[in-house]
Image (cartoon, rainbow, N blue to C red; front, side, top):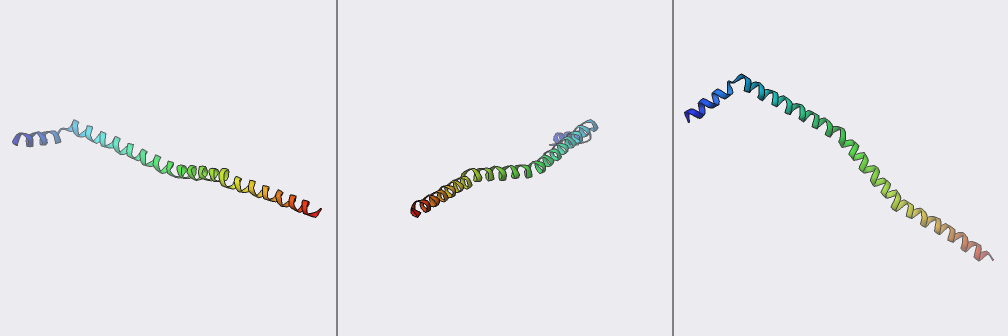
Length: 86
């Protein structure tokens, strides 16, 4: 146990190792800042992309079908009005 205690105190007082540890900490901190900035930047863009794609799908499926049925019904109404006037 004495050796382990001696090793840990020797390691913690090694200036080169402390600089390396500090450098690694700084690199990790920088990396995490970049990751957080990227996430903050991408999140609203992804949300808008999903909303736009869902809206396009809704327009393509629901509104177009409703429009076609409305036009078809309108033409049928005009046809029946024309036929029953005779």
